[in-house]
Amino acid sequence: QVQLEESGGGLVQAGGSLRLSCAASGRAFSSYIMGWFRQAPGKEREFVASVRWSDSATSYVDFVKGRFTIARDNAKNTVYLQMNSLKPEDTAVYYCAARLGILLGRRSAADFGSWGQGTQVTVSS
Image 1 (cartoon, rainbow, N blue to C red):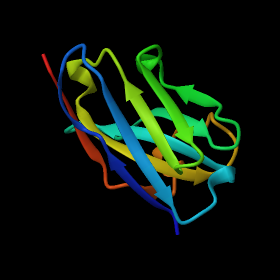
Image 2 (image 1 turned 180 degrees about the vertical axis):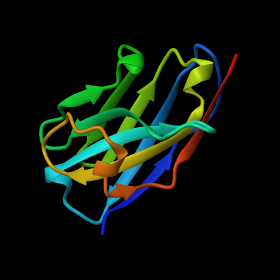
Image 3 (image 1 turned 45 degrees about the horizontal axis):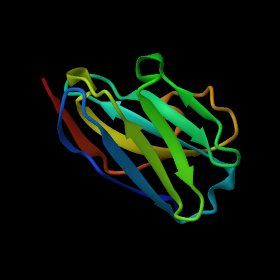
Image 4 (image 1 turned 90 degrees about the vertical axis):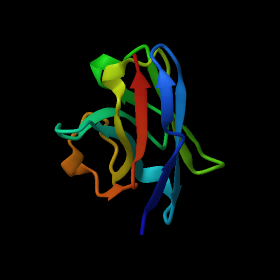
């Protein structure tokens, strides 16, 4: 059973940075896609970024390109989301997710079968 645990959220001023971590356990993840999603109050959960564990290929939603970077550390079984130039509209609960597969283009939350509990990111103006 896949277990995911996020950490690293918090309160930051606009323009600042945070790094989220997702510790993954329970499987060998070489055949997995790992993703980050976020959900703001009153809004649907939305895709942010994903990484293919086998070769570290990445995919991003347009509104975070150039600001956020997703990466995985094979030795630590951990996925990171480095968030720079944060904006108030980035405020949300951020979730780590995992799914079997190799296609980065599948970005629906329904495609991901394993989820962490989420970590709050608040960006003040």
